[in-house]
Image (cartoon, rainbow over all chains, first blue to last red; front, top):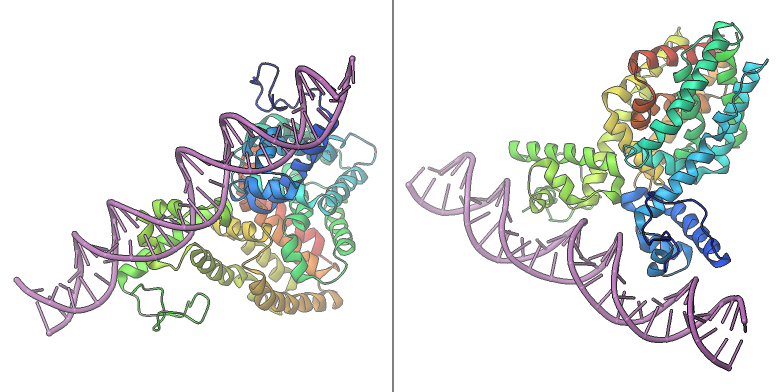
Amino acid sequence: MSPHDGPLGESTDGEADRPRPRSRIQKRNRARILDAALDVFSAQGFRGSTLDQIADGAGMSKPNVLYYFDGKEAIHVSLLNALMDRWLDPLRTLQDTDAPLDALMDYVHAKLDMSFTMPRESRLFASEVLQGAPRMSPHLESDLRPLLDEKCALIGRWMEAGRIARTDPRHLVFSIWAVTQHYADFEAQVRVLDDGPVRKAAEAHVDTLFRRLLTP
Amino acid sequence: MSPHDGPLGESTDGEADRPRPRSRIQKRNRARILDAALDVFSAQGFRGSTLDQIADGAGMSKPNVLYYFDGKEAIHVSLLNALMDRWLDPLRTLQDTDAPLDALMDYVHAKLDMSFTMPRESRLFASEVLQGAPRMSPHLESDLRPLLDEKCALIGRWMEAGRIARTDPRHLVFSIWAVTQHYADFEAQVRVLDDGPVRKAAEAHVDTLFRRLLTP
DNA sequence: GTGGTTTTTTACCATTTGGTCAAGGCACGA
DNA sequence: TCGTGCCTTGACCAAATGGTAAAAAACCAC
């Protein structure tokens, strides 16, 4: 029986990421496949990627990949599910505090750090959204949307209290995402246009940009 | 003879965009194909797009598409060439002036306007860069890079003269691109997360963001 | 070791895809 | 109106692609 199937051979849940007993080999090979798939999907999008490329990258045969995952789409969905969690984490940790400006700047730096640390994940996300988020709008609706609403309300309260400067909270977050993820998503362009120490310069500039915006 | 071939049936130049005599029909059909291809390529990337989709979108048969263009790649290259011109235009018009802040804010608004007016073009560009800019790094090197260097020098002089606030000129431009193009490239996400009048709010926020950054 | 289970591979299939070809349709100047 | 040459298409092809079947190989508890 293939390890991606449920006990009844058919999972009611779409992907069934619930932990089923997995041998060491299964864990290792699923991880290998997901890592290779992240390379491929983030670089070419879902439709542009092939199982052969993923199998090659994972160092195994195509049928063996399909032994561990239900198909191309299942791999993609699995990646996206895992990604959403880690991706929203920094926003989740944004809490009410006595130093709202510091909290927001921490968020900015955390997002920028992720762009340099996990560029493939950023590009996978960007690729999916760029193509209309066909496999992710449910996630965006059910996970990101309420989280963003909550944090925007919080930011709005900070602004009303005069603790940070006023601007549109929602579009503030959009611009934080845009500027930080740019370094991962447009890395190919940045590399051509900037020979210098990109990360250092980015950190300084991004800090300046949002600090000047938000300082009351 | 097919209209994309040079006089010798083989163009030395890669795509040969030099104007060859084209009939009304040729102009109309090439335009139709390019428009359909823009839809498809911007939504699915190069590898994920098919000639059939383009032919369907253009309302003609696949062999007819190949009568007008040398192949899938030639269509893509043709789109990219046309795009680079229009895309760099706002940056080209950034000139030395007595009111540098206004000039930069004009640039910001021009870029933002393009995102809302030509979202497909923005996504085509993003898609290409996201995938490592395999067909565009020559353009970036030869066209964009020198243009950016020149404009960064100009911005740097404005900063040294104290006419605008100091920050890294190169990364200032990066952040302008990032924030403005975000509304086109991540439109699917923005739509889910913001029910309001996106464009109005974006214009106001982006204006605030960069005005606060640059005001001395 | 042995037997059953898990893992891997070889061979294969149907569909899609980029592209070709030769023939038919059509426009338009003489 | 007639023929020449531009335009269009149906039929086709080879390669790529997602996926399957079944047997071989590796593994592991006993």
